[in-house]
Image (cartoon, rainbow, N blue to C red; front, side):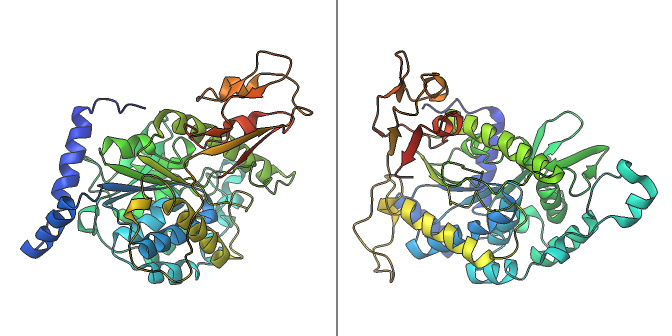
Length: 394
């Protein structure tokens, strides 16, 4: 897939990105960056997607990258990804981030708006108090501005008035307090009150762009490592319960996955390394086993980064305890179709952007048993009404 031509805004962002890397650095540090460039380490943007408490998998991603010696130069975060990303961009070690997030408890994050419910009833803007969550953010993230972080960092939110997106940390939005930016990026609809700024209201960036590849590409990096936490029923069926809130959030997740599906169709290419920890079956607000979620993120990241064509040559030459070779090549996705279940509806051919299916006969057939062009969006399996399609090597 070809990159689109960079706009003037894109160029400005990239110039700021480059300038950022040299601000406040000593001559020795600048020489170190130059040496890294001479060794042709790719300029890398790390994208941490949204997903509620599933986002604790991001901590495992960071640990795997540290273990393997894979570095990054900027972070783009959405929702929970913005929170973990801000801590990493602020210089916190992986051990410190893990220690911090494992202490977060549900009662410290969600406190019902009893007073507002009594006064306004259904007219109250949220179920839980945003002030409680914002107090937690003050404890978790560094008390710095965007320019004072250790590397370029951006997070997104959506304006309720017109549905437009904003990326805090970009020109015109770099002076917004970091905690306010993170609150806006994490502010799920109906859960916390929208963040108000200059007469506009901002909410969770995952509403429209849970894995912001398009923005990451505007920074013109050599490599994008993106983490997708949207629900993938092809891994394991989500734990859906027929209740009002469960139905609302399941509907949000379905829309979120469809948008991510389109984003991957349009923007995932050979320079994009996609990591999809198998955490979609977990509840968005599950605080019970953070350590397990972190471990799942670490294991998946190691599998992908040590085998993907864009990153396997970047892995450190040092012997790392616990890693074994050879690793399974994960450049392709294997596609399987059960002819007994196929009803010939043609949806697989319609939704696949890589021509992996032929559905012109009575039954569909697979054209690419090993699909190297697959964007790993799971669209074919997710849309198959009879579960006739299964995907492997993911």
